[in-house]
Length: 407
Image (tube, rainbow, N blue to C red; front, top):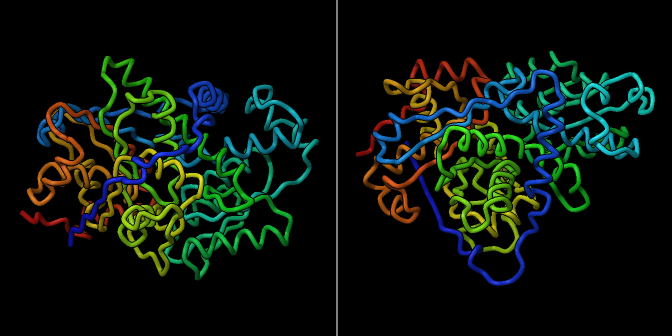
């Protein structure tokens, strides 16, 4: 059954100081991208213009950033883990990261200076694989814990990068706590994309790392002679990516920044529920968090991300699993003239939601509230490819989670 719930952002209209965005200023994100450019195999991922679909939906433009091409890892997450680990090691070495391009960072001298390091993280798959990949490149070790329900295929991909990895009988947020305690006892370094009291630097660096993707998209739109998007739909788990997208756009474009709509799985919609309640502090969602959108199955927000999205986002939307399934089918089976995009469950939910907002008469109020129409240009981020191939085929080929029209 398709379910969509939404709320505007009354927080953003409150007076008083707002979240500091200096870490996401153009110069700072330029340095992040310059580091990523030193990694062998770096190139901007494609920005796909879907003119046919835009026309069908009654939009002026629709663009999708396809992260399935990122470093051969099929997801964007490595941008955050690789940059955060690099910043961490630069600090340990007492050196500027600008003097530590990837070939130097992975060289014998740095390894000798650092000795043996173990990086630990919790993941549904994509972030952990990025951390494990980076650790392997640095000739270091990694330990990765995954929440219950994680796909065995994703587990094996992480192990193939040399990590010690296992699936726990805990939900995501409890797995994060388990990892933090295990790391404390063993002396490992936690590389987690969510922040809590006393743990903010590494999550912030991870968020900055995601800024490369946003910077690429803006440059690609400019190079193609396209104007700025009027709307960006971005998915949220702990909110690190969504907050980065919001922060980079706002820091760069100010009042000209597009409206940012935050999209969550309804079984783990901590931002939506917090906004609905109007709480200054985030609300947590507990329980099994059983959604097909594994990358969004997080019930406790990153506190840094919460502050940014609380102060700047346009609206918060919660969606059921069939919305993501619709997006996967829509992107993988394009209209004539549009390019196909292989997008996983967490990557495609924004496309599914946008199509429903524009086509379903019951979503007219949301469509009008967001100001979507013929003059709108929308940017989406397909954050992962088919990182769970069996589930992808089950949905796209065999009809799991049917997104039957309700109108």
